[in-house]
Image (cartoon, rainbow, N blue to C red):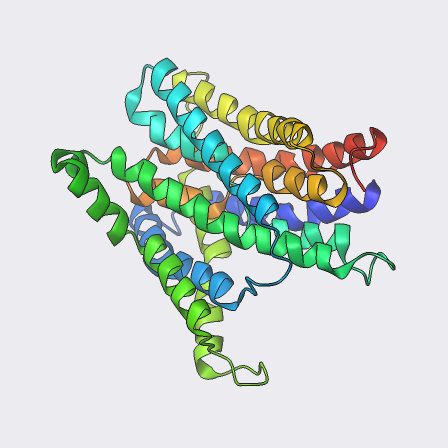
Length: 330
């Protein structure tokens, strides 16, 4: 259990430390609101699409292609997203916060936190005798879920965009198509389908691959500094209540319900472990950036991101321990 706790802390604490740095810089006047606004734009329009493109265009989508497993994970993400969105719309009095609450409650850190956790659980180098296909299967699921995660979020914010709604269904579709994240997904799929690579034939780095990687690496540090700069405490008002509920949904309701439904559908062992991990992750950094850039509530996004990043080290470790004791895992 201790190794999982240490890995979770080592994976998530850099996010918290960088956010606290952003908080300190903003309070000392070393960065201002303009820096945060422009930083979010750089991340949203360039760094995040590049990160998504990098993940998708290099993924081996033919390796360990388990259609039933991929369909379940993708369908569950969409169903949970729609359910959270519907409940939030019905129950929340502040309709302007619905998109931010929903986005914070279901978006998982698939590209940053998931890979090292999957490696710890299933890497044959760490666990001799483990089937190497399990790790590949998990990574493929993460790549597919990344596409659905950004696609559903794009729909969410397009529907809640007043300017897009005024133009009807066509306006919403145009807003989705123009979303830089969607463009990154499509470009990655096109490169993957055509077998195009930015590296050399033997996988060596080129100026193109190095440039793309450098731009993609901006996401985590710059976004978390911007998150810290936006951190404020409103007191125990309505929006703080939304933050707490969103954290509970993200860290507890989403993984527990996913595992129970998956178990009923017959998933066991490593498949159930992967399903638990991808649903128990903290909120994605990219989810906050989308909120900030597409008119969402930055207080909700920044607060949920900070809390889930901080608490997930404990909740992930706890779930792994409980499911192992109950015999659900391996």
